[in-house]
Each structure stands twice: as C-alpha cells, then as structure tokens.
Image 1: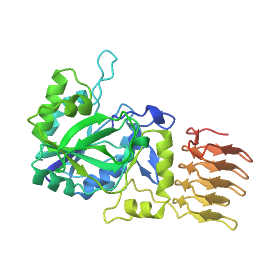
Image 2: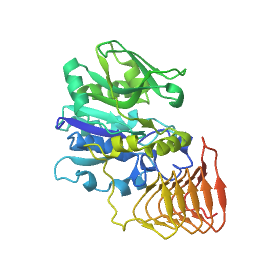
Image 3: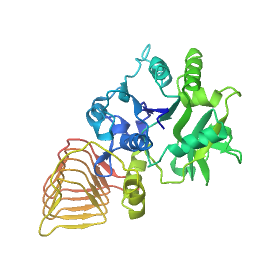
Image 4: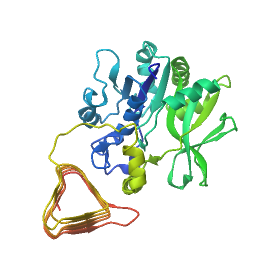
Length: 368
C-alpha cells in the first residue's frame, strides 16, 4: 500500500446532525467513549500501510486540527510524506461548490506525489478495514475505479448510494437511493483509482461546472473507464443523522461488534490523553456500559457510554445515554435516552428523558 495515497474528504453534509456539528465538523464528532469519527477511516489507512494521507478540510476545521495535530498518534508525523492538510476552496459568489472545487485546487499536490494510486474516503462511516484487500482486488480485476460497498437494508441509509453489479463485480448502475429494499449494495464512499484517472475526472467535472465528485463525476464517467465494486463484509455504521449516531453508539455496546471494531488485529488509533482510570465509589453500579478514563461514578450507569472525565454523582441514574467529555451529573439526576455534548451540567434532581428511537440532545456547555 506504499503506492497508494489516502485522501479523507471532510466536506460532508451534516444537516441532519446539526445539533452536534454547530461548532465542529462531522469528522470530529466524539464516538465510543474516546474516539472521533475520523479515527476509523484514518486508522484503516494507516493499518493498511499507507504513509501519505491528505485531509481535505471543511470550513469548521479548528476541532479536527486540534485532534489530529501532527499525526503523531497515527505514526504520520514524518520528514517525508505523512499527514497533509488541504484547506477548502473558497466558494464563489456565496455559492456552495461541493468537493470538486477543493479537489481541483489541490491537484498539483496529488500529481506531484510519488504514489501511483489515490484512495478517497469520507469520515461519516464507522468500520475497521484493511485496504490491502481492496488494492489486490483492484489490480486483479484490471479495474480503472473500485468502489467499496456493503450489503444491507437501505431503510436506514437515507440519501445513500446504491450500486448494481454483474457477477464479476463490474458496476452496471449507480443511483442515489430512491426506494427502500433488503440486501442492497450500498456504497461506502470509498474509491480507489490511478491518480491520473482521478485528476482527469476532477478536471473534466470542474470544467463542466460540476460540484460533486460522485454525482457529477463517477456517475457520468466515460465508457472507457471500468468501475468495479468490492464487497466489505465487516460491521458498518453510517452516521448521517442524530438517530443513526445514537443507534450506532448503542450497537457498539454489543460485545461482538465492539470486538470486531476495536479488538481486531488492526487497532483504531486516536489522540492520546493520559488520565487516571475510572473510579467507582462505594454505591456505584455499572452494567453493559463503556466508561472512559478519568470518570468518577457514584450512581448507576446502565447501557450507556461515558466519555473521559464525566462525573456521576450520588443517586444519579444514567440509562441508554451518551455523556461526552467533562460532563457533570449532580446528585439524584436522571437521564434516559439522552445525548449530552461536552461540558454539560445536569444539576441536582433534574430528570431528562428522550424517545427510545430519537434521543434528547443537550448541546455543548449547557447547564440544566
């Protein structure tokens, strides 16, 4: 995989999860107690042996820069190659230009790289994959472009892209989801191709006024390009709304899914923070939960995720909830089906409850 450059496109639609992305990009949304969403795609690239990764930044980039820094925690702080930040292109006349304009702006960076291939990925999907298998498939089939997909029902993938393939994997049709049905081949937004093919598509799309790499580029490529689909059989969670984020977080509490994602041969890396282990006081009780370092638990935590530094006071009951960094749940408070963003304070005796299929969200820094 030394011949492959990775590009993680962070210019993603976050309108359906705007309560959590008002001050951060989707890639920086916390997940599973100590990670950010970008950690999964970036770790998969690093574990596959890719040592050059470009991050196509969104407009709200401060939190992602703080999280990734030099790339040291992913072994990408190097004299040669390593981690590169690609600033977004400015919109013209106040219009949103999608990712094509930003790709076009950085074509010289791609063309001057020593790698032969480029692998494009987003950050909204939770998975753990070794891309070496994708590269071998790409080379063995003689594909010009390889799209990675997984099999699932489309009912929970609103706005997703569904592909139709022949028996040998050749893609025959690509469509933005219009109906729901079982056993669909749903694209994961991961594309592998020769870098010269990538630059040709971007240049052509840009010159014709296109804005989106998938819709205006791949869905309208010339017949001279062959596109194949590679099936990923592992766990996949698409974070495209608040409901899907909550659902994926609750699924992570399943030991089988947790082991597949985090106890795999290939680790998921994140920004290291040295903190004391979680403390469980005399009357603390925790069942089927993820509780990160630095937490102090005096109450009851059930089927929930606590991020670093959370305080759970006496008599507090946390159920089916996600509590992010440095939150303070004071005595006799109760939260159920709730997402608390960072630095939230729930004061003495307050009860908060959301729906089982759509959680109540408490925004960052709020005191209730």
